[in-house]
Amino acid sequence: MDPPPVWIMRQAGRYLPEYRELRTRSKNFLEFCYSPALATEAVMQPLRRYPLDAAILFSDILVVPDALGRKVWFVEGEGPRLSPLIEEETWRFDDVTRGIQRLAPVYEAVERIRAAIPDDIALIGFCGGPWTVATYMLQGEGGEKDRARRAIYERPEEVDDLLSVLVEMSAQHLAAQVSAGADCVQIFESWAEGLTPHQFQRVVLEPTRKLVNRLRELGVSVPIIGFPRGSGAQLGAYAHKTGVTALGIDTQTPAEFAIQVAPERMPLQGNLDPQVLIVGGEALDRATRDVMHSFKSAPHIFNLGHGITPQATPENLERLIKVVKAGV
Ligand code: CP3
Image (tube, rainbow, N blue to C red; front, side, top):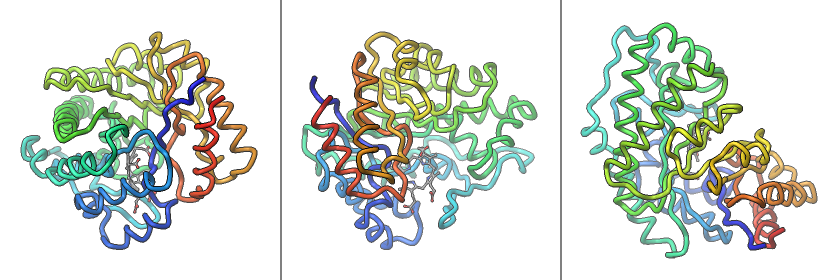
């Protein structure tokens, strides 16, 4: 069997010494993301080391709230911080057209990256899922999402309005990336977990369906990978009802389950445990082959079930890609 195409979520990142070096050129992570030259170089680094089949734009899902006029900053070793909406009486955002103008450096980065990488490497654009981005905006940080989930009960109309703004902003953001040269896009719904079925319908399924519709309305015809991490029993509903054309599978989801609940022939992407890239050795070889095996009856894109961690080693990733390229 032909080996599946392979790319790695967060393939440009802190596990690479050359990325850590490049990262020192900008104190502020968002500034780094808004520098087309630095973003392009970050994308090129893993491509120089490994025979990957796709590159992903170097940016962050939190450029969207930043562009909407919310405060966003990154605390070294802790992660993103935003001024939490739940502490504010009225929620105000800058207008979407203005927001898209602010993201011009991101689209310039896409143009530069597309020009810099070979034609046979796909360039993936991305945005956060509306609920995932809303969660950061609501509670101002990652960690337990309880406060964001409570806001669905406490301030339902305002949460719906926030999601509508994010749907429009994200659709235009993805459309601009595609105009600039992205060959497909991925929606990172990293925080799809822990929702009641009713909430999942309201804050994940419906906004994602609207986002996909709006993208198509804007004339975007490229493939859309949806990655609803932690969606569990709702994975099938997500795959069938949102309009995404490929499905990212998280680490905990059995391949057989994904194959069973997804529409027939939908490409499935995933889902090696990122931890095994810290361990390496035969455990890594075995786990990699297991993943290929488990998805062999579906169109498969090899990837991890979540982003690569800073503790993974470049040598282990090299080993992983060799095993994938050797096929099952
Ligand atoms: O290579 C790639 O995959 C492309 C770049 C990319 C980044 N973030 C770069 C980044 C992508 C696709 C993202 C998406 C993203 N950002 C998600 C969804 C995917 C996921 O992992 O669930 C989320 C939830 C975020 C928000 C965010 N940004 C977090 C939680 C962090 C980590 C904080 C930390 O310090 O661990 C970031 C920062 C970030 N985004 C880094 C990178 C390379 C590390 C910061 C640095 O290099 O200083």
